[in-house]
Length: 195
Image (cartoon, rainbow, N blue to C red):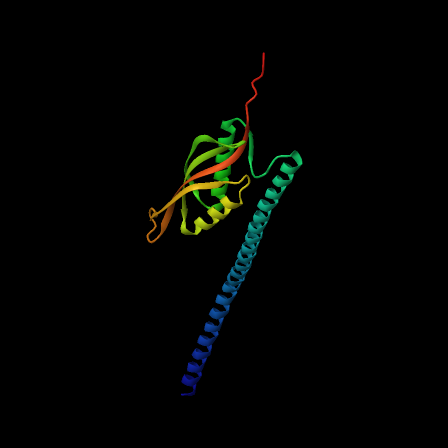
């Protein structure tokens, strides 16, 4: 009877020892994985902080570029609020580039741009452009704010906004924006070389 009890105790002890070895083996395998997951979480947090810092620097850079443009304009005697170009084609080209930059900064997609006839405004010309954009509900406010902050000044003559369901995304709506914009400009005539 004593041998049966000793054998049973021996089986229990060997089973516990085997279980302990399995637990130790799993711990040895899992420990580096857990450590690498922790390191990945730290890397992700560091990259998110870096991204937020870069975004803040981009905003600062845009404001510094705007201030620099004002300083350059004042140094050359130009008015930073008015477009100063040579030829009407250059006015439309510069205005289109400005509107596309505003749209990109605002997260909007330019669908189409169309130059409208120039109009006389006292000593200046009014370069006009019709613009079609697509954006989200969240993109409307940055779009309007960026237009208001633009240099040269961009005036919105008319604006129409229409919501529509986003393609392939249920419960998501995009906004189609149609705007007629105006920029005051001094347009010098194109100089043709004489022969």
